[in-house]
Image (cartoon, rainbow, N blue to C red; front, top):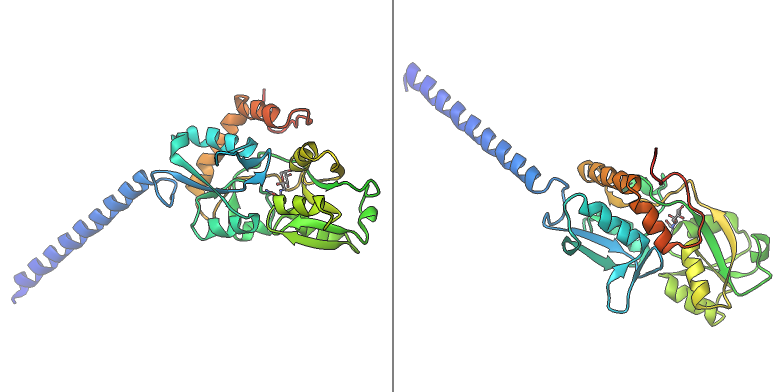
Length: 275
Ligand code: SNW
């Protein structure tokens, strides 16, 4: 090959490389346009949740998921172009929810999941949308505070902030770990445990269903507001969720859902429309 032949070969190689880079660039722009939120299947959103955290999230008799968190989430993603039929809910044990988001089994987990630094090591959170209490549910009138729990058997759902709090603060209490609230409350009703430790609104709900069970102790968990849990680094999804979430707060949707699902509970200021 002579000199000009070599130049021609280099020139055509360059054209080829440029064409290739352009094609890759177009393909990735197209992929981002088709799947801007990096969803597992861009056609819809897969959500991990719980069947027995009423009124936050629960399954109805016909297998539909509903509750405050579910309705808020559906409203939020409808603002991002995902109608209800594009959202699939799957019930799981609480302890599996965050790992399942990290492992790309779900795009998001929605179940009154409190935001903490420890959890942020494996998943990301949207902005907070609920801040409330961790509560002791018991038929035992002698349990009024941490001291009353000494020597008692206390149920917690594995992986919850209640488990973390009880381990740290209820010395001398026997912790009994359950996969879900229903099995813990069944154990409470048959006397296997003395109390169960869960989120305030869920405790209140079980108390209405089983009148012998009373909400006895409330521990503020305002520093761990519930957020939507997403895969670490999925910032486009998180940004869009936050924008839509704040719209839902600003236009009064959040307030309407709060009054619907938590009637009689004090109305927090921070999620109401700002003037
Ligand atoms: O930290 C609280 C938050 O302030 C609000 O009251 C809603 O519940 C919390 O997020 C705590 N929830 C527990 C947790 O994140 C249990 C969640 C569940 O049972 N689904 O571990």
